[in-house]
Amino acid sequence: MGIVVQKFGGSSISNPELIKNVARRIVQAKEKGSQVVVVVSAMGDTTDELLDLARKVTANPCSREIDMLLTTGEQISIALIAMAINEMGHTAISLTGYQAGITTDNAHTRARILKIDPERIRQELDQDKIVVVAGFQGMTDAGDIATLGRGGSDTTAVALAASLKADLCEIYTDVDGVYTADPRIIPKAMKLRFISYDEMLELASLGALVLQPRAVEFAKNYTVPLSIRSSFNECEGTLVGEVKSVESCEPVSGVAHDLNVAKIGIFDVPDRPGIARNIFYSLASEQINVDMIIQGWVRDDRNDIVFTVTRGDLEKALPVVENIVKEIGASGFVYNDRVAKVSIVGAGMITNPGVAANMFKALAKEGVNIEMISTSEIKVSCIIEEDQAIKAVGALHAEFFE
Ligand code: ADP
Ligand code: ASP
Ligand code: MG
Figure 1: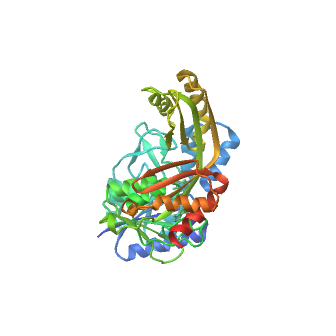
Figure 2: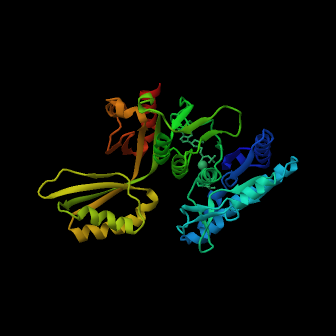
Figure 3: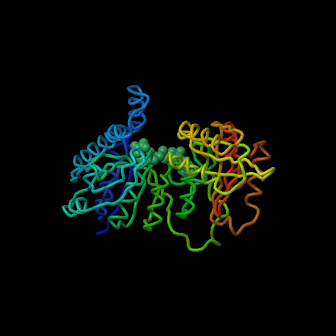
């Protein structure tokens, strides 16, 4: 008998009626003959509400305690889902991340899964039970609860599917699948029937929050077949899998945007070996992730370096940059946290010339100024003014899909 892992996000279980609806879908899968492992998020906006609660108590909550607090959200969900399934005449058992054998590193609020021991889950499945696991959480080797970063239940589901060698991992959410752009912003966005792991990884990393990027990484590394679909209807969703040949891929599969971006520029950086290392090593030592980096043309042995970080990291980054400016003898720095990143992603881009040019043309036609550009084999991203982000996504969607 094959194993199927089903993950339900917060909006799919935001009230008791929806919890019963989800329980019915789970029972259907069981009655079709699969062994079913369910992963759930916290109900509705519970995680945000718990974060607000913490901020009312202290401006600087310690990350270990944040994890202790936030994981209560998922614990409520697993108990209620298990109760609803039991009420329908099947036997379910709820398990926390620890009980499900998930060990993480100790990077609280953004931990990574280190290993999974699926023994307990297997035992419960062998007793014909439906196993309901709390998403987004695991236990460190020191015995502390840790969370996997926002959206982390996706990663729990895919990691469990990999570890249990499941036939399929289904991600149930509030949209019918992966679209050519966020359907909440672009009503004309179209559902994709299939998308490759690589394209999905780029889209998710570039702001399409429908899947956590680490979940896609797991799926790709362990070749877990993924299906993204709606908990509210029976429509066929989007399959995420391996692509056979780049030639058969679309030049552009999707448009993504990310408002969680801040830009920092350092002026008149001395042009000698080791300087870039000093700047980015100092930022890395403070656990600050740098995304785009652009170094300008050298003039009089000096040039400018501009890079982006997440807005959440900006406050931490500024004192580091201030120090480094003094240390290397640069003339100063500026920052702007009102920028956004818009991107196009497509595995067929590499074999189709002119895709980037068309992107720049579409932005120019709408009067959107491009501040930074970065490219890879399957994506082009531009940093623009935050206020123009939605207009820019609309223009790019119209250019490539309408
Ligand atoms: P869940 O609570 O189920 O985890 P999320 O809110 O994390 O759901 O993810 C689903 C949301 O992702 C959708 O409501 C949609 O607005 C957003 N989204 C962003 N980009 C895309 C895209 N390209 N395709 C589908 N959904 C997208
Ligand atoms: N509840 C967590 C969050 O809101 C995890 C998840 O939904 O995947 O980020
Ligand atoms: Mg999510």
